[in-house]
Picture 1 (cartoon, protein in one colour):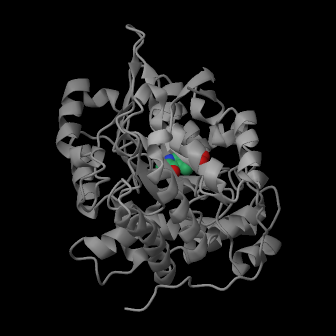
Picture 2 (picture 1 turned 180 degrees about the vertical axis):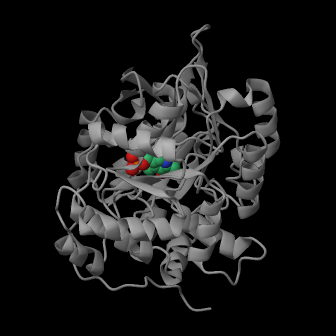
Length: 457
Ligand SMILES: *Cc1c(COP(=O)(O)O)cnc(C)c1O
């Protein structure tokens, strides 16, 4: 087989800035050792997130000029609505400025004290919005999903047996909806099988609970189904995606992932009553129902992106470039979550730096070192992000996994960029015994990873 190549050529380039190790040591210190507080221009290769960092196509940029900026009833909205509706099948497509705005509206309506939201694994903003409403966010991934060393397909699946037990324990009246995140971002970017979505739907229906997809990476998930699940090899990505959505009663969606745009999202709903209420909140917090916090040009770009992301040449290149990155690290003995998911490589910090205990944030230590030696920005997804203090005992409760995510922006970096990152990760790994832990010196009450400041131990 020949090398799988980028299915595009480059029309516009953006220079990246080189800095020295000494400069980066100072930058790190000034940023409180938190990569979110480093200026982007001081980053050489930015793998902080794949969210909103996509390169748009010439057609998407052309769409920006086509955008209809009318306050109400803009042509751009109807184009976007048609494409999103055809893909998802949802009766109501409610545009929002990004995924968390859809979450905020949804959980304002269905959440609240005494309610529980089960999910394969909540993403950080989803968990925050559930908890902000007063409800409890519960993660029910299959057991191997929590084992970074287990090599298996569809490690993002929901544990449907645990789900049934959970519903029986809490009572279906206290569970306003069940969510499945595709792909499972906080769980290592692992895909969810169609079979698992179907089974979850069957359970949800049995107890009369709606099923929602957190559909940010629906196309990457559909590609994994096509490649790995029996019976889908001859179906198009669009058909597979449509089937995935057909089992759901609604979705939240961040266009900043698989719609290949820099800003945008939507809430998809079938329920008339819920959609009416959602639109009422939308008008107060986001905007009129035909723009919802977005410019007409954003809706054009998102509509175009939703079509482009279904292209199999694109998805083949996308998934292969992540897999290539993972293969090289595994060959060098670097512990990662296996197999690689769709949008990122997750280093397994527990095995990478076993000498640093969870409460000294091993992932944060690796993140800082990657920036120091290579100007690479990554993010900790472990006890900084999800660790807690037990309310009663005041004791530190670590996250179930200590990961470092190297997210790959869509259509942005070439193979030589990735080769450079591989070299840097291997160098950090070789010198891992010298890494030390961190402590938090200041933190906000919620989503602390965004703004907390650290000091090296
Ligand atoms: C990004 C993301 C969100 C939130 O979307 P934003 O556009 O960043 O607000 C929700 N869920 C998952 C799985 C995500 O990856």
